Length: 168
Image (spheres, helix red, strand yellow):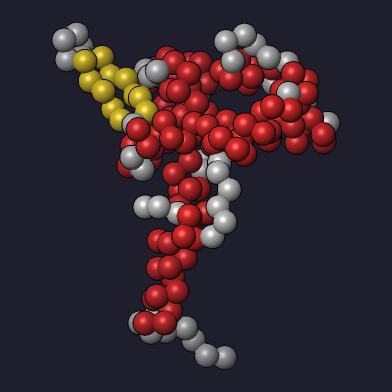
């Protein structure tokens, strides 16, 4: 059996291409993780979040929340804001422009998930729906709202005919 030579340029090229150029892997590196999507949605809903308050509300450990927010900052979708006019300085976290662009996409994924859970009979925590509307919504309202499916595809996630439609 032959060994893979990591110094071989063909192997290095293929490895870097999978890690650096695969859009699916990139998007998962940005918001993949147990709390990242929830954190981003909380920021979108409230404008910004405070660390300790978010720990209490989401019932997530400080270590986990710190790591998730740090990853989101490194990805360029979250910014740390310090109000030094207060003592001690007040720190909050908000979305960058890039982070704001993610919200309609996350909402589409969220609505798909609610529908899929409903189809499969998976119970949904009603509190999970609060951030997605001014009034708490029932899962059946989301499942029955056909406009959301059209909106998710037509306005937020334009369909690409080929690679030439992608502008960087």
